[in-house]
Length: 79
Image 1 (tube, one colour):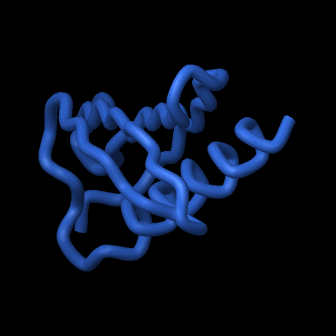
Image 2 (tube, rainbow, N blue to C red; image 1 turned 180 degrees about the vertical axis):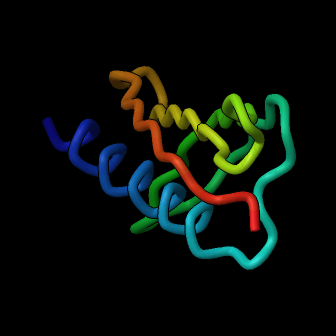
C-alpha cells in the first residue's frame, strides 16, 4: 500500500507539471526517473494530439521499484 500511495502522489505531481507548464509536452513517448519523498520512481509519458489538434492527451505511468504501476490520463490545451 505504501508504494502504491507514493506512486499515486508522484503520478499526480507529473500530471500537474504537464498541465501547468507553459510549453505543452512533446508529442510521442518519453520516460525518466524522479525522486519524491526520498524514493525513486520510474515514469513514462505518452502524448498524442486529439482530433482537431486543440487538445493533447497525456498518458502517465509511474512505478516504484517492483511495486504496482499507477496510471493517470489528463487532457490539456495545446496553447
